[in-house]
Length: 229
Image (cartoon, rainbow, N blue to C red):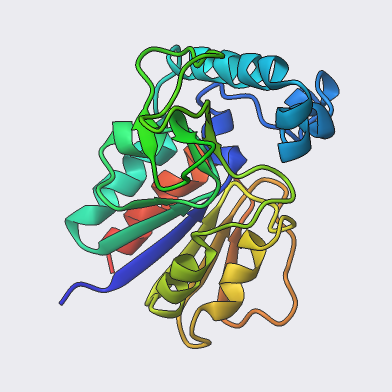
């Protein structure tokens, strides 16, 4: 039976494809306030602005491609049972060819009912508009976990982390909870790798190796190392 590698990816993976992150110096939050576009209150107050914000994110996503880090993780499936938990809302892992991807914070290319959260739809093209409704007649909203909302997938993600024979964290500062807490569910004896140019030593995490590299450089190096074991 193949060893299970669980990978947690953050904004740093997508940034090298040209996806703007929220927290870097050229990030989206310099143009938009979180409370204006990424909270439920913002949606109630100004749904047109919220839809436009995500329409522009979706339009940009259509113009970019997976990068070397995404493709390296696909290669890892040659030898391992690879499960990806991503904080990113783009579909670059899927487009690269990864077969098991769990989205913690929702998916940019999907919309869901404001009346029934179980009703989720693929968005055709890049625009979601006022008047686009679900089968029950309610307005569709972005299928995104906004600030202040519960993260429904955190429990299955925690369970997955607890089963990891190897755990890899890529392109995330491990400052955003609850995702940052996933590493604490990983068995103490399992090797852990952190790939991020700004990575710092994390106290209390056993068997942790740090690669202070960008995802596009560090992930292919790590994958080659793991494939040679």
